[in-house]
Amino acid sequence: MTQLTLPQFSFKLRDHYLIGENVSFKASPNTSGLFSANGPDTIVIHFTAGSSLHSSVDVLTNADSGVSAHFAIGRSGDIVQMLPTNRIAWHAGESVYAGRRGLNRYSIGIELDNAGQLKAKEDGLFESWFGSTYDESEVIAARHPHQSFKGYWHKYTDIQIAATMSLCRLLCEHYPISTVVGHDEIAPSRKVDPGPAFPMEELRKSLAQSTEKKESHSDKSSERGLHTQIRDKVIDVTSSQKRHVANVSANSLNVRTGPSILSPLVEPALYKGEVLNVLEKRGEWAKVSFTKTGWVNTHYINEISVRLPLKR
Ligand SMILES: [Zn+2]
Image (cartoon, rainbow, N blue to C red; front, side, top):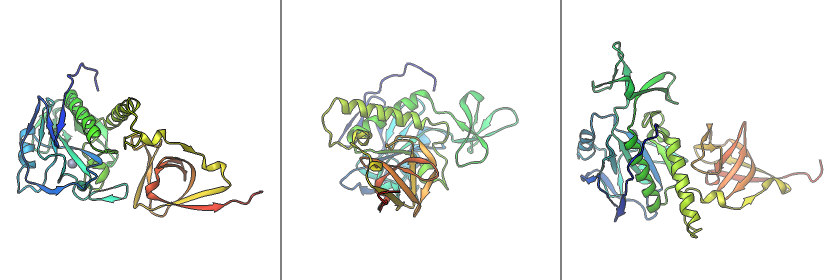
């Protein structure tokens, strides 16, 4: 992203409704009721693959469409909220992440106005599925991790990304958000949004930083923040006389470079039943070795202790 002086978005969330200068509300009937008492713990980012914010909001608020989202963010940073953030929206579809299915029940959906994946034309322009064309300056060329070829993707605007980051930060203050994912990460066989043009790692980093800042200024150690795990006491498993082994209990388990949901992924993910050596534990995270070394959430592994002979 180019460094621009971006306006500060001063949003507030009051009774699950977003309040701010560039915010409007248009109700969607497409909801299956309230989240469970815990509230949403995940944010899912999408692109609309639509021609305008207006046209996408029309679809997301149409009872016949069968889809909705909590927020849609336009290319000038304007935000349309369609459901209060205590109600379940229909944006994820069939989905699975970290052993949970049907992510609508746990997540806030944010749709970004963006034309999606584009096709290169002979005249040097790029064309969307709905026939609009875009100049080279509005496009990035990148291979999506799910695809075997380099694709062309409509860029997001800087102000749109800034609004998305501000909104996510606010949501993290109000709900126990521990996961921010792209639709492509929870429905990998069907979806490529928000795609390589979206700065997912920057978003995760920025949320981790603001959570750290918030936590260093408060004493609420019980608060379930994005980074609380890291401060948890280090338990050195290797110093005990047991060899710790675990197997994967989730259908698919992400491995990360650090003990946080915001740490980058170590590919490939693990599958149910795979056996791991447990090297170290920090809070709800375990450092494991398999063909590589990485961190996994202990909720999705079964630990088995194997006693080592005292002498070799
Ligand atoms: Zn999507």
